[in-house]
Amino acid sequence: MPNVLVLLQFIFVFGLIVFVHELGHFLVAKLVGVEVEEFGFGYPPRLVRLFTKKGTEFTLNWIPFGGFVRLKGETDDGEPGGVLAAPKWKRFLILIAGATMNFVLGILLLIILYNAVNPIDTSKILVMEVAPNSPAETIGLQPGDIITRLGDTPIDSSEVLINIIGEHLEKELTLTYLRDGAEHSAVVIPRQNPPEGQGAIGFTIGYPEIEVNFFQSIGLSLRTFWDQVKVTVSLPYNYIKGKIAPEEARFIGLKGIYDLFSNAAKVDQSNAEVAKEFFPISRLSLVSMLTIAIGITNLLPIPALDGGQILFLLFEGMTRKRIPIKVANAINSIFFILLILLFVLININDFINPIPIP
Image (cartoon, rainbow, N blue to C red):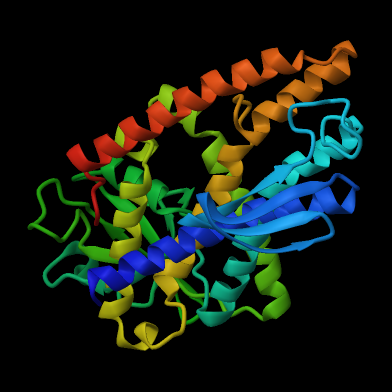
């Protein structure tokens, strides 16, 4: 697939994510009675005004990334029908609507994904291949077997499997597995120095597929969404505690995201069956994660982001005093500049140190 086509797809997808976010603000503002002065497709400068409906200008702008919403009274708390003149609960709903729409989009994409291909069960370890003349072959392990225990430890993740094997190099270890519903056990001795590419026991792992119906896919999508929220929120803590490598916790910009998208396109293209789909699976999975991540990022309590404005609202609710508009605007402007600088630095780092692509 030509890089130009992948780039155009990336621009469309990223623009769609931003557009959906702004659409959330727009719809809820209209719902609670706050006037919307402009809904822009793309970012200024303006190309043309498309039409005006119920007091809202719909415009087409030159920069083709998503869109924006300009609410009435963003700088004047005395303007009737303006956002700053609205009750706190209305402003809160408008602020969280953008991220909520990102979450809804991510969950919908996951539902589509889980109905297009069977999801995998990462709590079960499937034997994919067995190396010749390896300990795995010696004990009769076969592709399709499910590893259930090593010694007395249940195996519910690849991390547990790797850790237990690493603790028993050149030591006897009882390996328990399922085959055709029946449980079997054998004693194996993981090798200290196995041949290259074989591993200590000599088998490669994967995960079994799960067959789900439409309603089960909804539940699975919600669990996947919640798992991503937990992983993202706990990222700084796990990084500080040394539980994850710096490469796994690094920020990435548009360049890094495009690299991931481009790699997903290559994966889709390499699989003839997936490549025939209207929206290839690897890209669908990446976009679902990306829109959820953008929603979470926008809720961070940083001024200039939606989460920062929610923080101002909480302060207002607790003190019953509104932060002066000039002060709030100054704080937002300072943090907006800082975020832009951070964004530029992150993208420069993406060029200097490209993210590792498997």
